[in-house]
Image 1 (cartoon, rainbow, N blue to C red):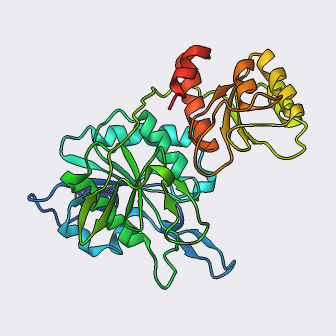
Image 2: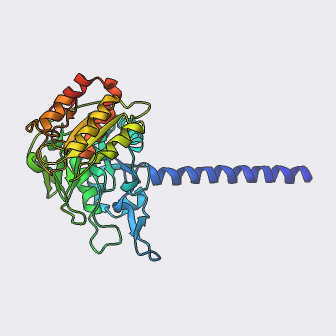
Length: 366
């Protein structure tokens, strides 16, 4: 009798364990994998979530927006997605983009490349906070091996807002990935129906939904009525491998009366490179110039950008601290990239060229 009871309990716990494991695996798959309604006639698009305003809600205790939504939660707000594509979700992180780092973008780039190795996946949509989205998109544009379309989307209004913009941006991102009109654009930043090149886009307004613009270069396209309308082609294409260790590069902005002490501090603190946002077409004052020469003499690579919104750096002025003088001293002119993107490019370029000055100059040509 005792033996029969023991056999019964063993069988009971075995069946319970099998049921539990099966349920757990189903829950994991349904939360991060294929949607339940699979349509073999539709393309499959990967959505990789990293966090940001699009995944935030207002905390009633603090009154501020905080990370709150998973990838599955985001999809529930866009039921019409099932008519456009089959969706596979990967929850990479759930952080505000002010907490993003080049190291995290390196991991994200490798994760997206791995996902896109699947021949059944058409491309990827990445949900990301808007504060550093332009930098993150540019990092992936420089490092992704896959040629499949990758679209960064986000939101300026959190999910608690009376009119959140996140759901429409996700839908438009998926529409773009699936469109034959959206090929060979590399990584894009697509919000409020406008499609921007990752290299040229910048955030221009702190709270408005129409914040991302591409300045002189213009938008790549526009999404309306479920279709992509192509306006421009991609101008630039550069690719770099992701190094095991990213070089240390700091970003400094020149200001009136700058004595260059921060440049000297960066050089003495072991920086591999320094990006300086100068004024105008790329100029700094005399004391900053002396500090730059100090950094150069210590073997630190210095790249000059401009804090002006649009345009670029040119060797126009020959006075002490002028762009022409800076270039003759060994400073590399950063072209028309923003300061933050100049830093991203220098991080990857330093690792690739081992600091070779001539090769670096070639990389920053525009």
